[in-house]
Length: 592
Image (cartoon, rainbow, N blue to C red; front, side, top):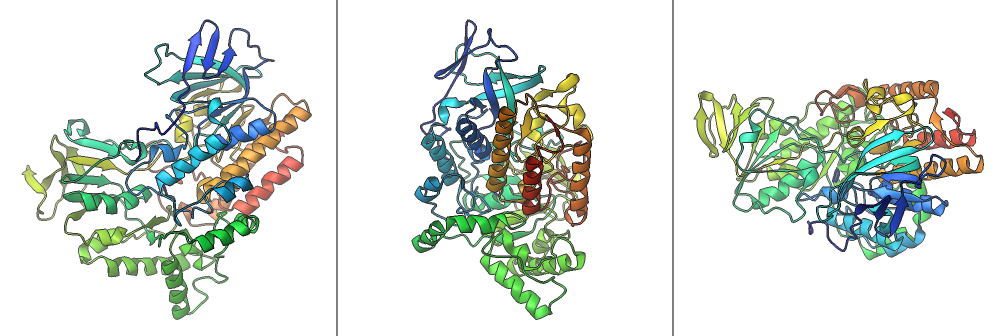
């Protein structure tokens, strides 16, 4: 998906219902006796929330290390963000041969990716294959939402609610677990904006993060798309090819780099598979844990001549993808170098988009890279189509929704899809049949914040994070023993190849709880001072970069009322080494 069509999740999924029969909670073939549970005898060792790539591997690894585990997944199948994000054009912005598990060489060798950047359906098929190959479904409760987690002295009480309407005995149930792992995903909680009178709109509305599984046919429709981040940039070109007319509602223009997607040649795949271990090792040594075959340039953008700079940037532009910023080693630390790189992309936009005013609106004036860089296929070219128009919401803000569409302010002139004026020439109503919200996610913390989590001494996580998410290593929160977060705030997570970060965290957690078992340690909890020092470290590292120079979902500014805190930590190799050192030192910074 760079963010992120099949049937409604059936695809052979094994739906496991949660049914209370007497004192037993029956989950598929498993049966848990809640009446006899005691703090010293939890129902399961590890409760895992989420069946995306993090939850699947956590389940597999827990089993390998001798722990019982159960996964709770609110969706009807595995895949996490790739289960929900089925919008047109959804695909990963990390090359498929890198965006894949590396814990099993047999899995690496047997799976065949078809394209440089895999589509959502292909990634979902991969997740399903993994679930089947390692027999994971029998320990996953689908259509089940974790509503609350409560620490009861030495176990967690996990309360759930089934949403499977076919279950005639459906009701909330609970079990106990020694450990809880939140594998809820960084991009899984849809951010749906509100507008005045939006309930009046009589047409259809969609969010890219909760796309209908049966797909949507926009043929002959007048469509509006809100949002020009990754999901908008991926979906807009394809919607434009279907719709009678597409209006893009843009709040902030984005920098986007061509993907240069292509079919993978058998020769290239065979070469990677013959050297997969070295390929993975080289990737893990880069700051983003990807692109080891295209290392960052040795110079800053200001240290070379203009001809050399343009040649280096043009080479990266032609190669395509997220590694564009790696042409120079100071792209996100030196403001002047960043400006020179941004000017190159701005020139590309102006040379691609024919209408000068549309090109002006599409051209960002912000730091390049302080928001997630986008990767596209024919995004800017789409605005040359006669059935596509652009509304800059900074110049023409939305006043309100109507039954027929949207009224915007300060409209200059008229266009063919402006059906009527409202009040004065400064207000124009645009009529639509469908509206798509490509408005992203409440990133990193959104899914976690939907769970009522109460830790030691009755403190809630919402209180602990009231001023912003605090965390030790992105893995643990002070006051919440035996609770782990995979790719949580304070870890590299969304600044990296997510599967590499996921695998790193899963293996660290599995090693940690195995160490606790061997050393007879009943609990582990982040120390308050260690957590404070870690939060300061994350802020210090982020402060050395240009990441905090603009409003972005890295800071949570896309969600009204969310505290402004830079959540990910730049730099995977140094982080991974720190985690290893802390474990080697007997889990320094933790109380056990």
